[in-house]
Image 1: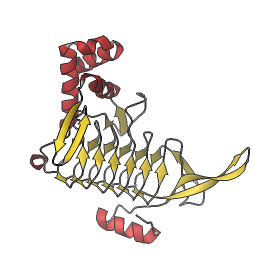
Image 2: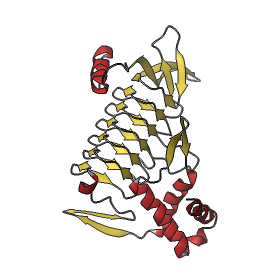
Image 3: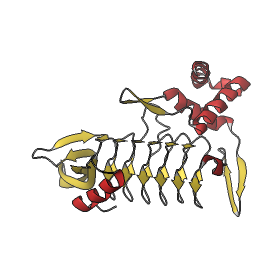
Image 4: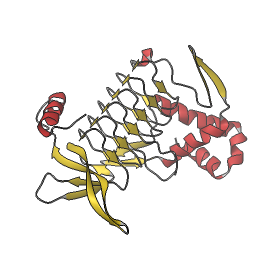
Length: 271
């Protein structure tokens, strides 16, 4: 890995090195390792998410060394630089037409892909459901047994280079038409109701206690979240600005699925 990183870092500073075979081979190897899940854009170490910026650089360098090609899939035709993932059966992945995943994205066993899209560099862990028209952007990190409901948009983050990926930790439930971008982190077992939009600057307010608690860029584990708004003063007057409201916590004492159903009923959260 150290040698791969060294070659990638050198090519990032000197793009003329992209013409050399050893550089191209190193880039290809990084993308192959990403595709197999042996290398990740980010991983959790000592309870903190660490981003491997050099791996993001490799993904960005992959595009200029690839040639455009025409791909035929039944009656469908594509023209792109990045091939599609293949051989789902041997990986125990269920893929419903017209789900699309790019090579360089890792998808673990027992994942279900309804008609959806997964971009290069993404990591989708075991048992996750990617529901209809959900989008998992480049480099996004999705945990185990996550449910991405219909129309969910998980933002990509290849550029700017210093930006972190969107991270959804294990057993989270993301409701229909939620949008998560700009490197936000959703903690384990969190439940986001339909239409929650969270960016890096979105106010996330815990209103479940007598005094509000504010977060940005992070939803704590077990949180139940709904869309909300607050009043903000502008030169032209006071207007309502979107925010996310934490209205309670999931109970860890019950089975995950049962707990989810109870949570949705208790807080009347639409999904």
